[in-house]
Length: 135
Length: 176
Image (cartoon, rainbow over the protein chains, first blue to last red):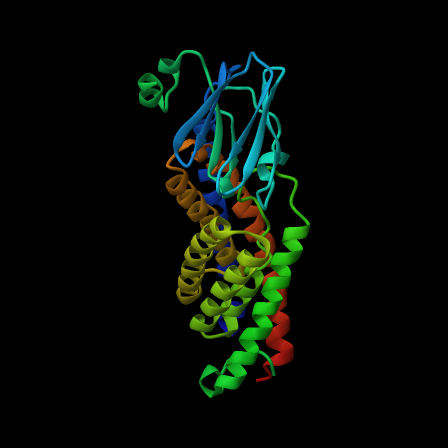
C-alpha cells in the first residue's frame, strides 16, 4: 500500500477521470434508451425468449404464468400492467411499479419472464419490428 | 495475524482458515444485503457489500485465493438465498469484475476507489449481457444507463469503505 500513499494525489486524479468518463457514458446512454414513450396497446409476455401471451391493456385481466421455474401472476388493471405475486427469490418483478407506456418492461430474471408494453402499430417501433410483423 | 502479505510463507492450514473466515464474512454481507433489499425495482441494482471482501482481499492476498473466496461465496450464497439463475448472474458479474479489478491493481494507476468503480460498473454490465443472452432479448438494454449509474454509486461507496479498511489493516495487522 505504500505505493498508493506515495502518489495518492495522482491516483486520485486518475480515479476522478475514470469516474467522469463512466458518468458521461451513462448520461449519453440515457436519452438513447428513453425513446418517445406513449400509452401502449398491449403487453407482450415472453418466457425464455419466446412469446407466451399478449394481454390487451383495455381489458382488466390476470394471467398466472407457471413454469418449472415457478409462477408469476400478471395483472392488467386500468390500462396498467403489474406483477401481483410471484415465487421468485428476489421479488423484483412484484416490487416493480405498474407499467403502461411503450417500451416499459418488467422482468423476472429468475423465471426468465419479460413483460413489455407494445403499441398497436408495430412498424413504428424501432426494435422488435420484425418479430411483431411475423405475428 | 489474519492478513499477512508474505503469501509464500503461508501454510495450507493458514490459507484454509483465512479463506474460511473471509468466505464467512462475505456470506454475512450477502445475507445482510438479501434481507435488506434496496427499494429500486431494477434487476441488478445493489450495493455489492460482499465485493468489499474481494476488493480489499486483492490488496493483501494472493489473487487465486481471492478468486476462490469469491466463487465459494457466490455458490454458497446462491444456494442459500437464490437459485441457479441468480448464481449464473452473480458468477458472470463476479468473475468479470474480479478480472478487471485484479488487472487494475496490477496497473497501479488507480486508488481502491477507482478500482472499485471499474468493478462495480463492469459487474453490472456483465450481468446485463448475460441477462440479454439468457432471455434472448435486447429489451433489457433499456436498463443499461441505470445499471451504470448504480454500478458507479455502489463502486464508489464500496471503494471508500475498502480504502478505509485497507489503511486500518495495513497499519494494525501488518507491522513493517
